[in-house]
Image 1 (cartoon, rainbow, N blue to C red):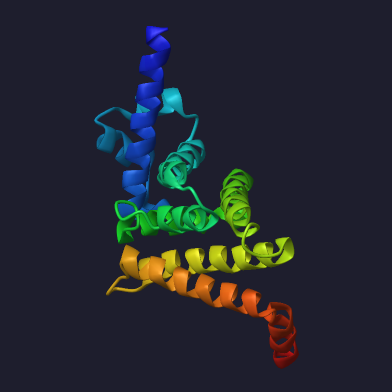
Image 2: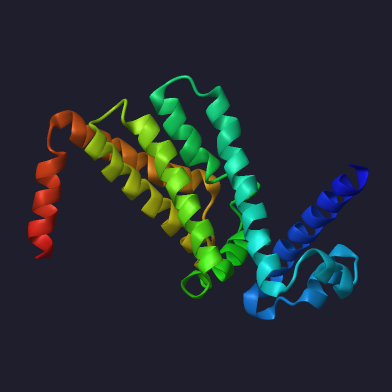
Length: 210
């Protein structure tokens, strides 16, 4: 039992080391040797726990996602109303200790590999599915179910876009600014829903696009 626990600890250390290297080097510059140095281990130790670079960085992505997931879960535990649950999901996705340029660079590096890596693609699918489920769960108590799904799509797109902006904009964007942008979007969509205009609004947008 003790050996298993030590093994799990070592794996976690290596996953964290891999994500730290990704923040500095990106996927192209990240190597097993650099991860080993970051973890204070040898390349042989890294390969003892992970078969290759691809497997290691897949686990690094899972580790980083778990931290972001936990930030949402902690907030959800204290939420008592649908709006508080909605805010918990939004705020958790912009956790200040996590919403930082270097971490964003690591995420972008991994996401760039999604079209070529089925396992990373599955991880990304799970991330979006969980986020959408949490959002719809809160929104369905405020608007119709189809409207809830549509608003949730808009929120997830905004969250992805704001993370992308953080990674690409030198001046950066703060967690508070990001949360405010999403809240403003939500406020606008809820106001449309309350007025009974959201479907007509979408039809107008569709007509304009054509």
